[in-house]
Length: 234
Image (tube, rainbow, N blue to C red; front, side, top):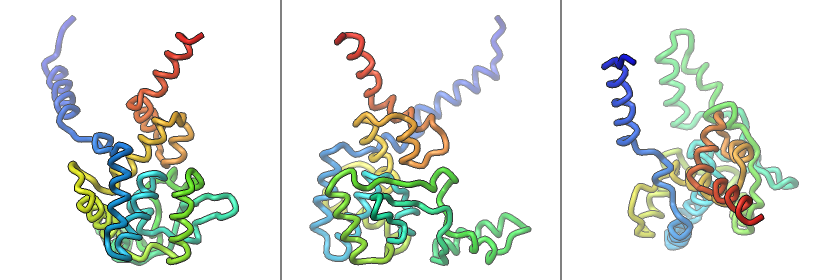
């Protein structure tokens, strides 16, 4: 069989990138680190500590994206069914949405900034419009209830979501990279280790591709362990 240098070089380049590219799942917090992060939130002055704890819990256990947190409205909460319903559209003209609309209009001659802003805010993908149960633990339930008692929606900017996580991480003296999206990966990893199957995990996280959920389950090793136990413990 003839080997083509170009094909070998392309494979080598892809392999090199795979080895050198850092993925979010590499920054996942373990249970102890996550508890330390939450504990550190209580040491921050109010309202920063209150907001940091909300961000860490809904990000690190329910898997909300930073943009979803920044645009969170208590009207999204279905109290009867204990669900947070991420909508396909939430009218918004915050600084982040205005900047995003401006960038869209800049790269699309058929679109004005006002027109782009009219579609803001929306979640990352169609699959991201989803329902998320928050009665997974009493701690999360109480956090959501107390937030709703205090605010109608998250009162800060998208950049503040990042700052609250960073403040808590610094207070906890945790090493490594800690940021909102690593909390989302922490949630995915947490549920994968608990044994949540790929389809419901995909629905919870709002991923378009089932393979992303399967990756977290594969990394957790839970499915492999369950299959081996079924075989050997008959």
